[in-house]
Length: 102
Image (tube, rainbow, N blue to C red; front, side, top):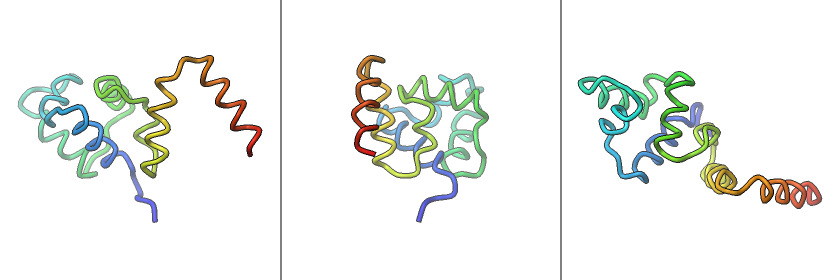
């Protein structure tokens, strides 16, 4: 069964992989130092959802593509990150190969 909103889990996973605290990430994306930790905690607990601009800044800081946050399972999230790192030419080759298998 998929989770209603995948953003909290994806955000926490990417932040921990980047070895950042909630406060550090919050400050890096422009949040006030005094509220950064609390706001990030609310996002990771699913109490609030970041707006798209904040989510884009988080993606940049965490070095993940924005679509990573919307992946409902871990394999799709991993694929999103791997594909994001490929040069455009390699992505097009991958699309071509995968299209033949579907």
